[in-house]
Image (cartoon, rainbow, N blue to C red; front, top):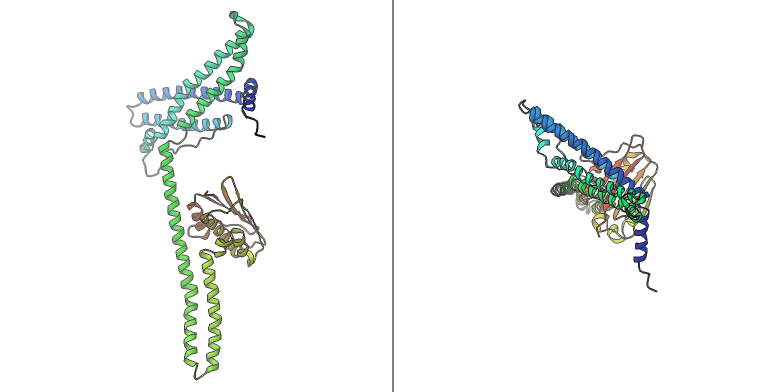
Length: 410
C-alpha cells in the first residue's frame, strides 16, 4: 500500500504552529531579540552622531578627530560581537566574525587608527548598526499596530468586530518572527565575513594546506633518505665486504669462508627485514589489501605496550584519508612506545556525520607537544593537507589524547 500523503500532516503542523504562536517560546525569543536590537541600534546611532559631530569639531586638532572616529568604529565591533551572541542565543543562527584590523606593531598609532576607518569589514559593521534601527523599528511598530487592533477588536472600541481581534491575536507572532528573520538576514549579510573575504580566507587556507603538504612530503623524503643512508646502506656495505672476504678465503681457508658466509647470510636477512620495515613506513601493503583494521592490528601486534584497537566504519575511506588515519595511529603508537611510559593505550577510529575520527589515548606521563620538525608536527601537516584538524591534549602527568578529524571524500 502506498504511504499516505504528507500534506494533511504538514497542514496540521502549520495550523498548530499558528494557534500556539502567541504563547510559543520562539515568539517571545523573537520579541526579546528585536527589542534588544532596537535599543542597541538606538544607542549606537546616538553615539555615532555625537562622535561624528565631535570628530568634525576636533578636526583642527591633529589626530584627535581621527581618534574619536576610530574609537566609535571599535565600539561598533564590540556591539557586533554582542549582536552575534544575541542572534545565536535567541534566533539560533551562528554568524562567523569577519577579520578586523589587527594591532600591527610595525604601524604607527595614526596608521592603526586609519586602518580601522578604512576597513571594509568595519564599515559593514557600522552599516548594520544603522540599518537595523529603522528595520527593527518598523517591525515592532507593525506589531504594535496589530496589538492595538487586537485590543480594539476584543473590547469593541470603534465598533470593531471581535473576529478582528482574533485575527490580530494570531497574526502578531507571524509579524514578530518575520521581523526577527529580517534582522538575522541583515546580520548574516553585514556582521559576518563578506563573500570576497571568505574567498580570500579560503585561498589562504588552501595555500597553507598546500605548503604543509609539500613540507610533509619533503620531511618524509628526508626520513626515507636518512633511514637508507644511516641504516640500510652500512649493512649492505658490510655485507658486500664479508662476501668479498669469503670469496678471497674460499680456496685457502674454506672454514673461515663458510663462517663469513654464515655471518653474511644473517646480515642479509636483517637487511631484508629493515627494508620491509622501511617499505611499511612508506605505505604498508596490508593497508591496501585488507584495510585499516587489519593494518592497525598488525601494527600493534609487536608493540611493547598493550594497545586496544577498535575500528567502526560504515564503509572504507578513500586511500588518501585511510593512509592519514594509519600514519596518525602509527606515529602516535611509536611515541607511546618510546616516550610515554604508558602501561596501556587505545585506538578508536569511527565515522559519523561525514567525518573520519582517529583517537589515540594512553595513560602515560603526558607532556607531548606539537613542535616544529617533530613527528607530531608532520602528522598535523598530513591531516591539514586533507582539510582535517589535528589536536593533542597531553597535560603533565597524562593522560594523552591525540585526535585527528578529516572529512570523508565521497
